[in-house]
Image 1: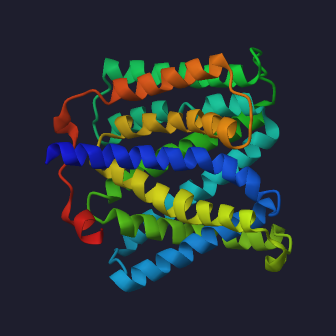
Image 2: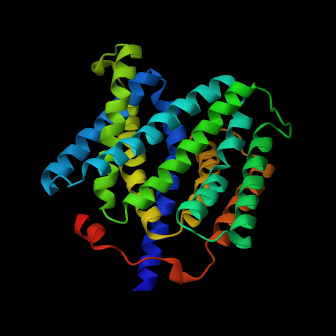
Image 3: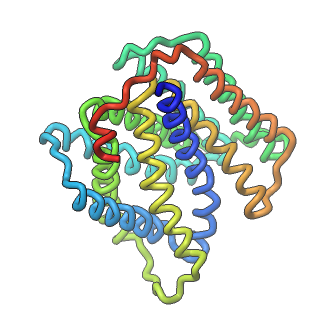
Length: 309
């Protein structure tokens, strides 16, 4: 039974980061026909409609006013502020530096978990997260053909630090709320509230488009981003956060650039260097290292999750 729980938890983590890794390539495809704001609205709007249907069929969750406030904050941090800070950061700093800063999310989550959940900071966790950071660095250097383009300005760096902090706070808040409520309900309300946050900004900036002019590839890309990258991936990751230490789950985040590099090489023919392969191997080693710990750390599946599935 324990082995089955372990398989379920780590399969969920692998599915989430695999989908998010692929989503960068799919987003490139979608942006050939959508504006940035049009794509955000199509992605999150579609996901919200699907969640509303699911929650209507299963029954809407009963959250207190305080918990609704927590859900709104979760949505503000992720996807709201994270998307904003990441977008603004990428406009004001180099992709290389942005990637390296985002790879620090596990470090911030490790510190916050120690403060709020009294999770132990072990030498294994520190070593694993350090290895994953080096691995991401090699992925960045490899992409730049051995150079280290660390330009940009301090404003861009601060925006990326805001993205890191937003992601870390979201993970901590979801973990706390999942102790009382179904992950399905949390994820559904997170996406619905997130969409409500995006709508006014997108409607101001959005460019008009004719649905009849969209190709099948663009529509399929939106379907992937709405159903898989938003609904399935967030549900899987939130589920894993509710079951294991945050420090174990968050190190998987640094697998995303590994999967993105591999999928871009396979799907759209981008180059993949030996150095990038080495960096990817280091990240995978780090994930394995951090998660080789006492199995007692895994919680029992709460009844709310079983009932919602």
